[in-house]
Length: 217
Image (spheres, rainbow, N blue to C red):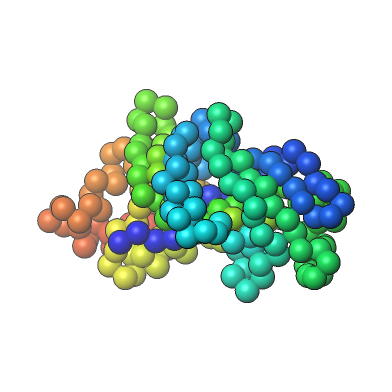
């Protein structure tokens, strides 16, 4: 079972108008983020086609809060650089959007985070990064900090508690959050993660061991 995930990105703004319109890049291809994720060109192609068929685009949210939309996106497309976005903050109708606009103009709002389902990915052992190849985009939020303060270790524990196998990207991130170095987390993923695969006979015991490991920190 796939679960909704978040990817935190620097918000590269090309321009912000006084009327609340802005444009920039929500994701840049080929750049490794702080959690060793690399989005490759074409990752958004299928999801953008689906949204086009619906006649709309993903929601523009404030801090991933589903009850706080702050504007609309008017354009999203891939180009040679990354995921280009163009949108409009509803500054005349929404005080929160007006506040976000002021921070964007001042440069104090510097993050973007996407809510998505991961359709296709692979681990590049040589480079030690996760290659995100197909992203099912749900929403795109403006966030105060690019780093996700929503503890990923909590997500992993919840999945384990339900008897589900967490995706490898979440496990590596959770290990880093509880104190593992990048090299230690990668070593676990390379040598130990196969033990939690549902195909293994001792999968239940292995997942319980992983849960206990994370709980101790």
